[in-house]
Length: 321
Ligand SMILES: [Zn+2]
Image: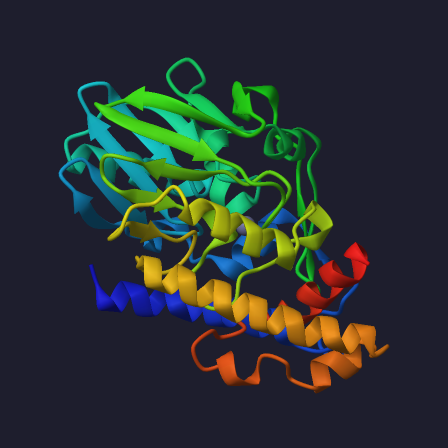
């Protein structure tokens, strides 16, 4: 599927990013707080317009593109395991897509982190059938709810009811032996949020990074959820020690990537970090740093899709001082 579908989804993404990037003269300002439903309406097309695009990675590993974060799907003798589950209204389509590739009930769902576009699908899963797994901090975020601060706007994420919460959590990592595969969750401290898990499929030599790594542009650093630019650099660098040459990189958003793409991203992040840090040491304000365009030579390769990258990088570095 198809180019047309991708174009449509891109259209909604562009509208969302446009709304996010509007300045304070617009209907939205830094003080605008959207409910989750309002955020859905702006960010996503109606569920009945969505089709799930399926990309086969290996014999029993697939990547689904639909609304929100990408879903990795492992299918085999033990059943179905998915990484991230998008939003409730598309769950019937996700389940249909799983059937199409020969799968049945979802036995495990791993949430890479708590953001609604990756984890709200929990609300549409039956806890008697599906066990949800996440980092303990991600579970706490889902339990308590909170505000996701995208700078240009803020989105309220409501607390999840008990049935939609992870029933298995980890602190520094864990491994599942499922579908004749070693599926390892790794966590190297706060990165995109305080509770990120990347998921490595060792036999398949693939990793789903959640939003610690995306291929749609600069990463979103959710500083108010404990994320930081240093954390993302550290998380990506540490994870590389676990991967073999030729590893298949499944990003939280965007198309499949290579190890080289991750290495390039680390270099970009380190370069921008150094530039911003130098200006902080010189006493420059946030606005002065933004005006100095510290990402200029990277902007073509990494669009600032949320319009907040320098702001969030600066803020996280300033907080560490
Ligand atoms: Zn996220």
